[in-house]
Length: 189
Ligand code: ZN
Image (tube, rainbow, N blue to C red):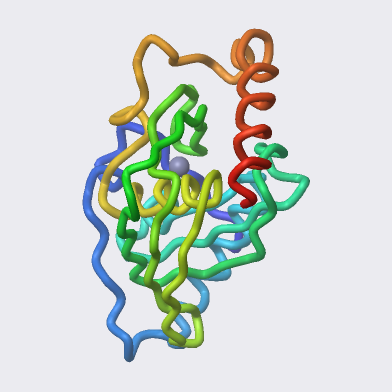
């Protein structure tokens, strides 16, 4: 059962902060198969990331990957990353408005993200990572860690910018992609 159904907004598991994974559980068959299912589900849905509670498992682990084939072709590529117990720390006060979507939410819209973050996490081998992320990549990390904290994009979106994907394509995509591509070039992400 590698590809798992995505839990939609309204399910309480999306509103429940996830439980950290004990270090000794890393590498266990249960955690390994959970990670494999997250990766298969993310690729099947062409998402930029999937958090464990989006497939109904309330554990603090997410996978992230951005390639040309995702729903978000304007995002700089991110190699496949497995993040166990990730913690995001905002760095500085510069922010950017991003039009975000989510596999669990049928609408997209504009919200504010910090431009620079520091993220600490363990990978699937238990190796500790401490990295700085910028721009849309930092936005993706903030999005996934929000999921793990029980938050959704609708908590942050300016409600006057809410849009279906179809109406986003028709009326908002071109201007957003132009602005965010210029921004991405400027910050050199
Ligand atoms: Zn999401």
